[in-house]
Image: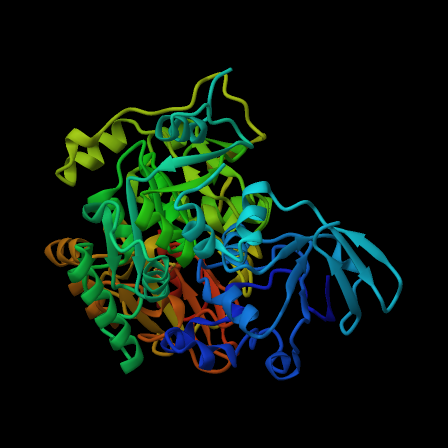
Length: 164
Length: 417
Ligand code: SF4
């Protein structure tokens, strides 16, 4: 069970909003890069986010480049899951590969600052602030298997191959 | 039932009956990274403990995003890439050779391949009939180690294009128009497959432009059939023997079909800050532009430079508008020099920067100032893309770029034809 506060963002949050190219020189200095997480969407986010909180987006979250640094710095900020109406393909794989759950659900009723409780097993999100309950789409089987091992590296260390 | 191009290629490379929606594990023909995603990939590779690259002769590390390096941290990343290549035997493409996707098209991709790269515009090689898609660092690290990856077989949207482009209109206008129509997430998780009489005669440089931008509609891959144009292109690259014809079965099943009449298209522009925020160039006439950028994996090829040079011949760029030109590869630069295009561009006031990504991703060689606008031939205009969240990026064709450089304002190129 995951519990935390929602940080609400709009539609089309791109990888450039999350870690812009101008910070390319920090990509091998992750602690420094992580200080800028989502800077171009909300410059106060990095300061305010707490361990266990959720990033809540609209449609097409994470569109743009393949840079895995985007979900990585979100994970490093302590975020326990990303919720969005839809997620760009590469970002989706990257987040799961890092062990960061991405949950596709109708995020319309979630407001910035709401307290959420997420049950990954049952696929339910409870909004403790307004009482609403949401369910998210099941995560595809192979991705769930990767997520359950904590990401693709531990998954491959265990199985040495893709088990589908 | 027949197969789409995606289903055909994935079936052949997985020995499974690949049908839309299935998950297959496919053998890979080429795996690559570039210098902005590469260091993390190599660190993840080292994490796996697997140690050897599955096929080092077809694993390429490209140094193209920040070349020559503008910062010591990036120089150190480059050292890491070079020493990894040396140690593990991977192929290195170093400073100045060009943008990874252009080099993949010139030297590596062939019809029927499965190609994965740690860069979203890996889709570019779809122009040659390769199933080519971008992934993140960890996926690519595992692909390097195992020589295979898992893929969900995508549903396909068929794009049929008929009719001839009017003068001043090209593939860039077509793909911007299409993205405007279906939206930046209109093809998420899906394949785009291009066909029709316009596609059948379209030169490879324009096919590459279209395939390159497939990802801006969320697509996993943008596929073209492999035909006589593909054969001719491979022959000119000295790789004639790698040609195989490839097309979808006539009874393949598609998610949907979109038909476009190329003759109806006009010069098109994507406005800040999303690629699907489309307008016609003539509707934006008068918007001040401080910098024009001609280059990138989308439009930095010889044909693009030729179009711009022919329009700028004997003219000057507007005094308030910088013109930055980055040929997509060394080969392109040499050909543009031999044809005299570079002389023409420099005489018109252009700044030529070395083959590579240059200003495209906002690290160097053309970072925008506060409140400035750039008209770029690249593929992305997200906020902050060219190094400054207080700046504005418009996307357009090389012809629109040249016309805009002359006037200093967004200009419909047909005014110069
Ligand atoms: S030219 Fe631009 S879009 Fe193409 S690979 Fe380089 S940074 Fe990416």
